[in-house]
Length: 376
Image 1 (cartoon, helix red, strand yellow):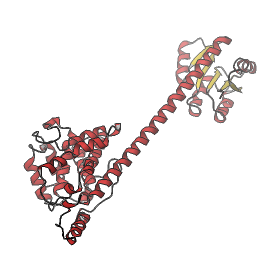
Image 2 (cartoon, rainbow, N blue to C red; image 1 turned 90 degrees about the vertical axis):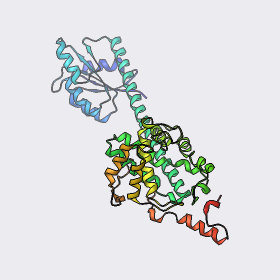
Image 3 (cartoon, rainbow, N blue to C red; image 1 turned 90 degrees about the horizontal axis):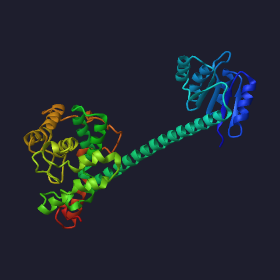
Image 4 (cartoon, rainbow, N blue to C red; image 1 turned 30 degrees about the vertical axis):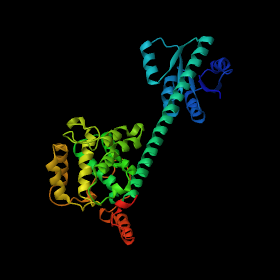
């Protein structure tokens, strides 16, 4: 495809000469004044504008300034006989002029200048397209990532309905803490992703362990303790999820170093992981589980405060207590909305566990022990 060049000069002989020099390699469009040139810019996809400076009605610099709104990417060359250097510099700056060519111009030098100008135009176009493609690719990656997140979270909820909605609630409590700690929007994004994904690795834990209504054996505890590492492995190497992956990996590390998987101590534990640990513990204590009923808001707050410094970061516990209060149950509708716009299935905590209970009843009817721990 040949590039189009707009030639503007009030002297028709000059326009014919420019066309003769350039028409072998480029398509040329001609105008004898600035206003006609602007009209042609609106009708044609112009790569390069070459205009004389001194023209009646509208000077070359005025034309080039006006052209910025019509063809911002076009390259601009000014033909001039100016001897006032400062005035020329000002004109070039105001008109975004690529180069000025003094009169009388040399045929061969002009062709070289035009060639370089077209190369500059092509480079700008490639860069613009590259940015567009990259932005689209990143957007698509983000959509894929969020779609994957939804699918994984839904899969975990479907596997064990006693934890349905848990991942979303943990992310909401984590956001509540993060916002009151002054985290940036980027940090809140990573924190929310970590909250939603923190238990994804439990997809690989047998139902007999997830649903066991009694204390786990040491062997079962060891299997359950693998879920942060498994969660991180499932997240993989997606660039947009690496911060969240770090939080997920370490959300069971304790302040005194007795947690897992790496027994990190104190501030060595990523801040996002410390926040998710508190949010996770609070939601676990205020939700029914196969092995116990919810202990309620007031007792959960007491437990968090009791374990602050040993298991939980005291500052984070203080923030959560300060926001939720120590007395009345918090209103779940007052929790912050998703920072990412992620909407997972909203499950009423009072309605969870039905799948668990149905399975227990089925086993009882078969004359077996009334416990889904027998389900393989």
